[in-house]
Amino acid sequence: MNRKKLFLIIAIVAIVGVFLGFDGHKLLTLENLQAHQGALAEWVDQNLFVAVAGYAAIYVVVAALSLPGAAIMTLAGGAFFGNLYGLAAVSIASTLGASLAFLVARFLMRDTLRKRYAETVAKMDRGISKDGAFYLATLRLVPVFPFFLINLAMGLTAMKLRTYALVSWVAMLPGTFVYVNAGTQLGQIESTADIVSADLLLSFALLGLFPLIAKFVVGFIRRRKVYAGWQKPERFDYNLLVIGGGSAGLVSAYIAAAVKAKVALIEKHKLGGDCLNTGCVPSKALIRSAKAADTMRHANRYGLESVPVKGSFRNIMNRVKDVVAKIEPHDSPERYQKLGVDCIFGEASFVSPWELEVKHNDGRTERLTARSIVVATGGKPAMPPIPGLDGMNPLNSDNLWELEEQPERLLVLGGGPIGSELAHAFARLGSQVIQVEMGERLLAKEDSDVSELVKAQFEHDGVDLRLEHAAKEFAIEEGEKVVYCEHKGERVRIAFDQVLVAVGRAANTKGLGLEKIGIETLPNGTVQVDDDMSLRYPNVFACGDVAGPYQFTHAAAHQVGMRR
Image (cartoon, rainbow, N blue to C red; front, top):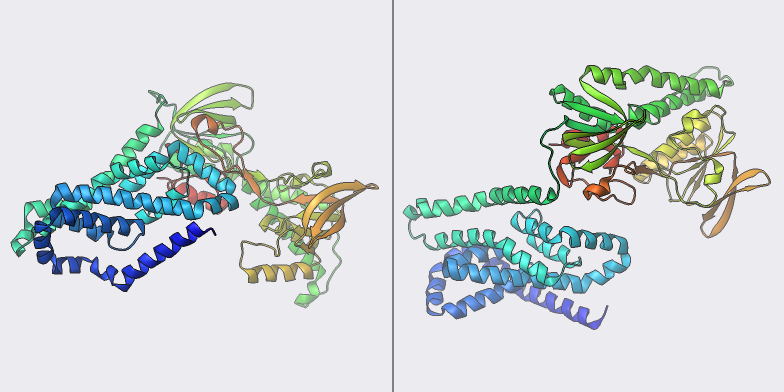
């Protein structure tokens, strides 16, 4: 840390210490203001300009250092100086204080954050460059976060100081006027009769209604701004278009059809998504077969005679397909068409916030419009860029279900939920399973005691766990597939027959044309959603794996209900 930064920190600590030492936090209270209102008002009348200047200076310090009492000081500005001088003093002082806090945060922390989180800071800067002024204005008008957090957070971005100061001043002005005006009424209370005066009641009504009014105005401006440059269709083909026939898409279409909306569901492959076709249903069917095999093999645990387990892996996989087929009618096109949903099989891409271009699987192309659009395209297994991996014909949670021969030696990359449940199932079915996880424990998102319990069970059931092993290179040596891992600085060679990659999932956003309507994706392909699951535009939503952060079937269905 350089001397300038150290000096500034010492100065800030000293000022805060003096403020607290002299009970400044107790002085800037409504009770203290009312107790000394008469004496202060008399002194202000005799020394107006000195009082305004001193008041403004104190306000700057309070705002700059985020000290408690800014709201009371705003009311005091109206009480002692009236609307004109009070508004001028508060608006200028609060802007200066916010700008100083902005500069302090930038000076002390921005360089450090740039070094440690260069990619994150760069993304923040791109967003600020694009919509920063409007975003700041909305936060000032309807503060979702306290102002001191806004001052600090904006100081870490690349926003220019003059932009920050100007936008802050303009956006805070309406709220400042409401508070100062309320303060003028407080200053005029001399008897109980004054409490029910029209002016006082109006001032406090404005105080209470201002956040609601500001929120409405911001919402109106935001809608006008976000749709600028787009021509809304005069008529719509549908009330709702849903892209993706997985859990989130099916629930969205179901709810829309239930309320008699005209809805179409666009899916390029099979309805049911990952859960039915490659995830929950087939994996649990496989796990059930594995559990049965383990029970028979260790029947003596239950007072029965253990028996050797013999069976056809192909029969097991056929049973998995049969289980999927039994559940499939619940997610079938026929069922949803009976519910009133138009099922369209093809690929969709955005033309505008209300229009999609659909390439049907039979080769036809058409454009469809809707008042609202839901992106529910799900996810896919992520494939890490490890040299030689592509040449191993890797298995993943999508293509695993086409296996007809059981791997004798199965290498599983990944210690998350998918990798762990499949590693355990194959071990119970008789494969020699080597599970490689670069972290120090399995199921890193779970509690540590859960990880330890799973680890102990896996080792008991014969899974060869290789924790803190990072796969670095795949190769074929003398006809044998091998992977080289790094483990605590050493190079470890592991031989295998087939590899199952389960290191995470990426969202299916490629080809959707989101960039055409100004929607950016995160590194793993997911999109950033607002609290109501909307994507930049109030009529475009995302649910399920494509929205994250929890890529589970039940989470996808829950997110559909979060749309308003």
